[in-house]
Length: 352
Image 1 (cartoon, rainbow, N blue to C red):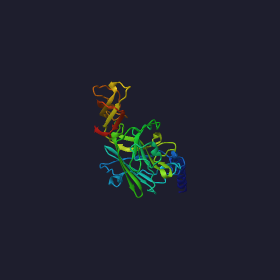
Image 2: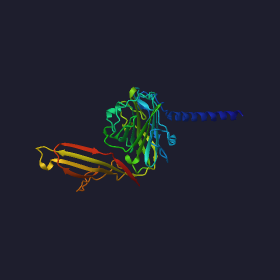
Image 3: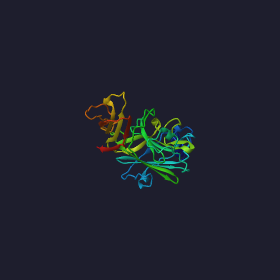
Image 4: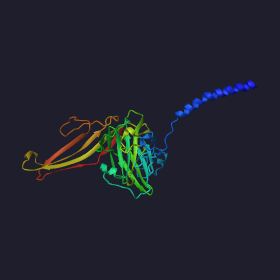
């Protein structure tokens, strides 16, 4: 009996001696994520990941997140300040939800505010100047649709629903805010803050149509101007903009988006006149021009859809940006001026 007990003790000791290093090794391999707001360096936090949820019923875009469909979305929160207290939690809570279907990406944001009367709004213009984004309350989203960590589409919205949109390239080194994304945006003022609903057509942004799962780089910005606070979903340092995509997070869960071929039609009208004794008669007088710019995306996998520029009376390819059809007339005049009118763009898409 004693011999059996000693043998059992030896086996138990051997088992403990072998198991302890394994347990210790496993424990050392566990990485504990920092608590939001616990670090002083915003970029010391790991890059976040979120998922969009596919829905069969789209939300009504009225600025209020009261549709039942928003209840299935993951809540993105815990924004981290870049200023005035880098690395700390934002003082005003922001919650963002993302849904999608075959046609659109839907973004819903609730921006809680302890002082709903204290919003700072500089402009109600479409594509308001960049100074208005730095000196106003703003919500912004950037999407790197090819996940190359260098380029993005960006939309910045103020509480009144005015917005500025465009593209950025080379990890924020270049921007094009002349680019228009055909979005639908509504905002609403609430007792405890303001809210946004945003519809982004897949046909209005380029993506890789060969991928079944679309993984997108993404970052989100909340600016509360009265307290000079900027906070981000994927935290960055004060010097970095929201479109620094090398430091962005990742949006997953988007699958089965049909390939699309977008058609952009932008009507325009131009009028001008030239006069003066020094001008030859053949170029004096007034002229008017009407037409439209047509852009058709042949391949969804390209960042910019190729097209052909055509003028009345000729048909020669001269680039890969816009197909233009123009007609002009002339009349006499005695004054000198020139005006142009650009109408809102219309976009549609065909799917394969």
